[in-house]
Image (cartoon, rainbow, N blue to C red; front, side, top):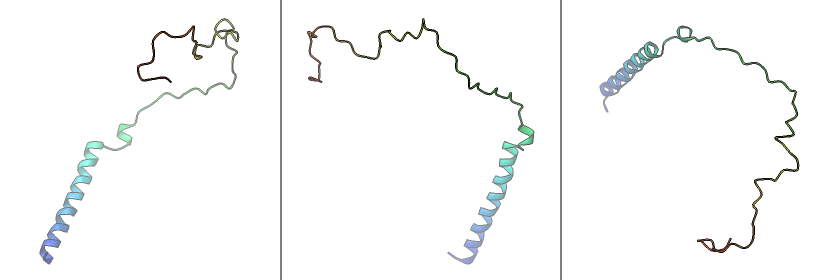
Length: 81
C-alpha cells in the first residue's frame, strides 16, 4: 500500500469512530436523562417460624422413595437396570 492509501484509511476509520460515538450518544442518551425511581427492598428477617405440623408431618410417607409392590410383569424396554 502507498502512503496515501494508508493515510486515507486512517482518516476514514477516524471519521467513522467519531460519527459512531456521537450517534451512539444520541441513541442511548445520557444516564441522568434515563434515570428511574425504584422501590427499595425490605430486609429479610432472620427469624424462622416453625412449619405447621399438619403439613410437615415427621411420620409421613416420603414420596421421593421408590416403592415396589410385587414383581413387575413387564420387562423394561432397554434391558434390566
